[in-house]
Image 1 (tube, one colour):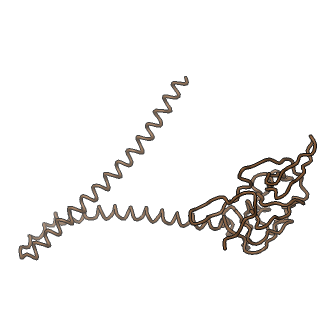
Image 2 (cartoon, one colour):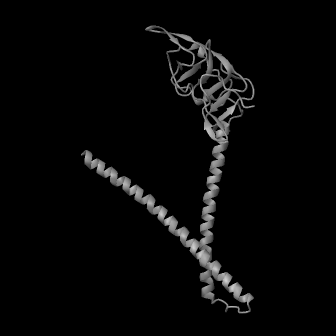
Image 3 (cartoon, rainbow, N blue to C red):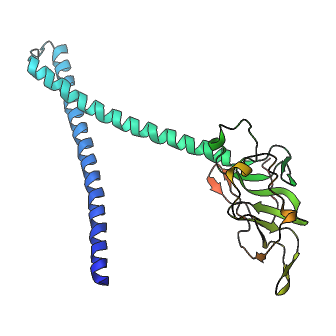
Length: 258
């Protein structure tokens, strides 16, 4: 049974590869044909023009031949238009992606309240694309917040943090100081740089709550941390520069660009 299933999978993959290869071959032939037709018509037209300038004009084309030349001339034009349309579509898609990236990964312009904390200006914030909420009557910089790397160590639930994330079903913070976590097995010392996790009181925070400034649902001082763990990358807060998206160094505050 294993060999039969493996054989079927291999045949499927070969079939998919063959289909993709066939499509590329067809596109290549269509493009090559357009280049050949355009080149032949261009050379033929230049030859007739050169003969006319030499005083040896060629006979006017028969109406049927003229129609054929027009039809043949339309074909490479259509192929060029197709490639231009593909290029423009890719260009628009790339520009839209760049605009979304700049909306999602940016620096906070001014101190802004997020629940019971104030996020300092210059902090690096990551959001779900706020463009999804363009129908809302406000434009808050922390709309659809996912994570923050603070410009300075910021107290959260009585402990200093370099970064936080509110994605998923819990708050995670990157510790900027040691923290003693009380567990059923006894006290546990969480070193600086470790990740401290606070499960949300309710498993899921609704979009309605996440998009209502000043985000009063965010009250970590009322929540109970349940675990801490080491993470090489810390809370992964992304930024964007001329080379694309990257992760600033963990274990320290974010330094805004000068």
